[in-house]
Length: 378
Image (cartoon, rainbow, N blue to C red; front, side):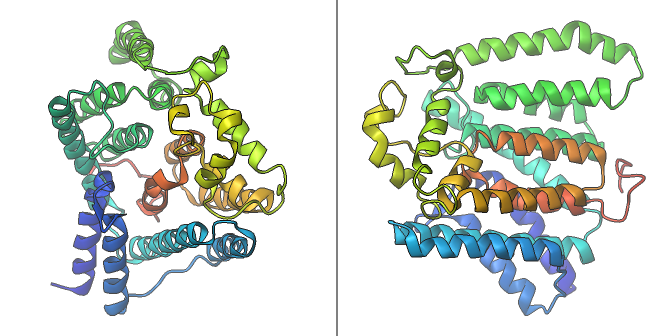
């Protein structure tokens, strides 16, 4: 077995396990340990590192801003741990892109591994849900349901892309999983994605589309409304926006309040939870997390970055996202990437492992094949 095959099998296995990243070793996600092993193997086999200098430069600047925040952070240890995690994911992203750039097979095996990994996670989660008696599908080991819904949406996209056997069965399973997450964000983007996929990207009308428009779409929309109504939002707030966002609008205002005194450089990387303790009396009343006195997370990546490294850090992060977008070749992949960026308004930084792991795959899974991206078997 060649070195390239060794690293490929390891990466395929790692991608399969992405949905189970809540499994912890010594209090940390196993993904960190697997990632370290992947990087060590990559280096030890002396595989060539592909470097996109513009991406490296902007990532270095973003990491530097996070490191500088250690100087003025009131929670040095929290910020340090955050920066170590950030550095890990940056390196992991670079090494994955390096492999896909030189040794990938247009990412076919890796995409299949992700799809079947999510499928296994859906089955596991339904069993877990049945045993625990909870009415909501959180994902394996109590993952964030918004993140799990996003994974299922990516899986649907990759099933279409690879034209897998039994694709409609697989898509049906993933749609069902998204419905049971009760994630209004994931449900909303599912409707938008299916509309885009079936009616905007391909404007030809056929019997399947007419049936989907006449039967499937109304059923899906009614399901979205029904499942969303099952959410138990424990808030006494009279604000309709607060009700609809499960208190996320309050977290948004809390984040803005945190940045009031340090808007340019922020309060220190990764300190949102700690800073929220200072504002608990002002903001926690009438929220589902009010009994705990703190917000478990911002549920908004951009707000967490703004609180951590300020306007400067957020601008640099947006430049980084723009660079990634420009490197995606296929139009459908670009749309899915934009969906991801919008979903980051509901996902916390800690739950964004999928961003660092999937985006390189999205970019390089069809590198060099601009024309026939969706042809079966490459």
